[in-house]
Length: 483
Ligand SMILES: Nc1ncnc2c1ncn2[C@@H]1O[C@H](COP(=O)(O)OP(=O)(O)OP(=O)(O)O)[C@@H](O)[C@H]1O
Ligand SMILES: [Mg+2]
Image 1 (cartoon, protein in one colour):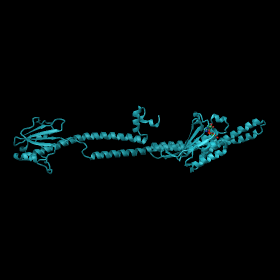
Image 2 (cartoon, rainbow, N blue to C red; image 1 turned 90 degrees about the horizontal axis):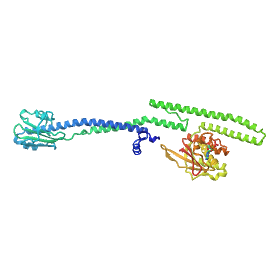
Image 3 (tube, rainbow, N blue to C red; image 1 turned 180 degrees about the vertical axis):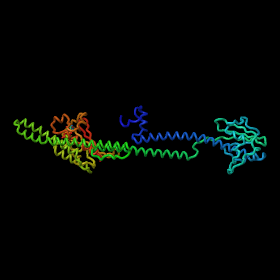
Image 4 (cartoon, rainbow, N blue to C red; image 1 turned 30 degrees about the horizontal axis):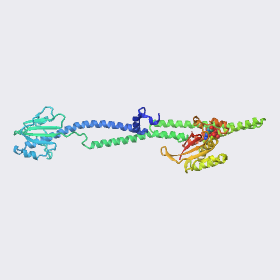
């Protein structure tokens, strides 16, 4: 399973998986933030729901209370007016638009006596809201309605679940009824803008805090990845900082210990290799001297040829040891000019193949940050291989491209028309002292260290190197370097 398939998006049929993958970001920080923000959203939605339910209940009671106050005020205004002036008083009142008031000879037929659990039960008793101030007048505490002004009878109509209400009062001093009908406005839990605004601000602040916190917490993982990459390029890369949260500090410590073990292991191995190479030189020289005394010309020739090969291998081993341990400083260099120099030198050394050595097309001018001597050695190894095993070297230098988190990479292709390599050998050839069967037989004199050295150098520069076969035949070495 690759990285894009990890997480809940895996093991789900194609289309939903694709949709999920679209919503499921790849970075750990984004995923963690997403999970926390969704969690926060759910908790807030539940909070909002609980608040809304609570407010609706409260708002309903408020609306009912408010309407009853209006009813009380209307009744009071009418009952305190002389019977003959009541019609005029009624017209002069300006109740809320949902209210309708009338003086009628009798109540509406579907009106009933109030039951004890009716929300308007208190009206029957002549209790407040009859003492509330009338519309438009400044609030003042009015005395309770005197008993002789209280209604003789009150009838209601309040259908369950409907917002319509009707109340009729039989006036104490005449035969007419004061009928008031009105509609309760719907309860709105978010009438005040303060709460939704505060809630939105809280959500945004929570989201920002989550993103910021998660990024800070997850940052060390990125640092660890960068350190691992730096170690891959250069074993002498500076150690990771061991600060920060306990787990991260422990991981950094473990990483630094691992890096120092790798360094020690590499140094030991290189030292051993160099020491063996060095110590072999003396006996080889002695053997060469002794071989000169072999009388049989043919046998002597074979002895000396073998010893020459052995000596070349020892020299190459020593060079390999030196190469990996030497720390040449990095500097800005003209890659185009460097390649041209290598090609010119190669054409001089192999005049027969000079026509097949050169740039495939006019190269762009590219400058890079590198170790000049080491890079020349690496590229030279590849070009020499192409000439030796492929009969020529054609170089393509591609213009730099931005890739990999803004890093600019430049690609150099080294191609030949030789036999190429069996696919299973393409990676193996980078191992020290490994040579393909064909070249072993062809007496090309190599030791099998060229590609190993080249890869060490290129990796040390932060680049990479790959081998691939060309069609119809031939080998292509692809070198990527950081600009
Ligand atoms: N362009 C090529 N075409 C075919 N085979 C190749 C090519 N380049 C490398 N090889 C194979 O890969 C092997 C390893 O190459 P490498 O450069 O590491 O060692 P070498 O050339 O044998 O010795 P030296 O250490 O002198 O370079 C070669 O022996 C050869 O068999
Ligand atoms: Mg070689």
